[in-house]
Length: 217
Image (cartoon, rainbow, N blue to C red; front, side, top):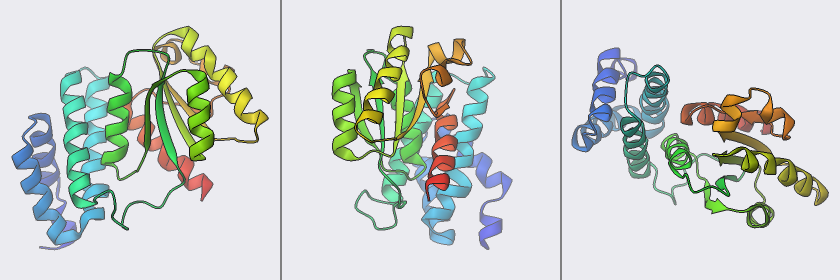
């Protein structure tokens, strides 16, 4: 079977349905079969990432549950770690990327984005829940080039202004991607707080990170 045939619409749909059913056994069987045929990067780029994009669109249109989105991302993350172990020299060569939840206890959005990024082959620093001071310290220490910030409440969103200003003062200019309810409710807010981009979903985050990395290269 050729590489083109291995990623037929039927094969991709089979993989997508296995993800939505949280059927790890079927997902692993499909991934293993096509990785042997086409190589791990082809599987990630042509099967895993498009399937996650489709799941993101289905979530936006209300066709699937939040649990299905979350579990699909986690399963894909596990599969990518199997294909490309963390120490593998095949991992994407990239500037440092980090993600954090700013001052809020709502962690699900951050976990979904982290899973989607890892499932797309990216290595990321996951800072969890942090305040402004801790986040700035982490960014400086790790020399972060792309920083994803998730917030739940407007006061946390407005703190991004302070983060941008303080990083500017020490000569750091990471690309800041923001997401969360305040930015969905106010379409201009991300620009007002000094962010470089805003994502509405985990798949948005993957797309934006890929574009920013392309611009940085």
